[in-house]
Amino acid sequence: MVGRMTAAVVVAAAVAVALWVWPGSVGLVGHGKSEAGSPASSGRARRPIEQLSIGVKRRAEDCGIKTRVYDALAIHYTGWLHATGEEFDSSIPRGDPYIFTLGAGQVVPGWDQGLVGMCIGDVRKLSLPAELGYGASGVAGKVPPNADLIFEIELLNIERRTGP
Image (cartoon, rainbow, N blue to C red; front, top):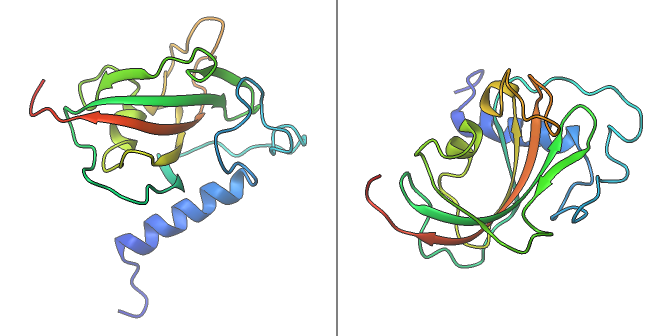
């Protein structure tokens, strides 16, 4: 085994790098504010995100079921532009959880990939390259074309479903 990296080691390293890139981002951040002290606000240049990175911000103490494709999920989320740290959207100030079917293409591809295996109460940080976010289109007035994105997502509820 010496000299060979297992999948678990690769994932652990990716999570460690993701948390190092944006230190101090523990917990749901700011409720409408970009995070003070983030690398973007300190003036340091940000490296582009090259692949999906999944960070676990908080694990639920009790996990009865885990999310799987075609489950209906209720979440709270906050999204930031990776390059600037600017918040572009959040469900939290609206007070209404966002509800969608996992794996049905109703959300950006990074969410469909990065939210599988969550428990109610878990909070994840997803770092998405542009192609797993809004891609070349962006979102008018909110997300520029080809923007890498950061999301913090809290899973509030799972409704088990077996198909679309």
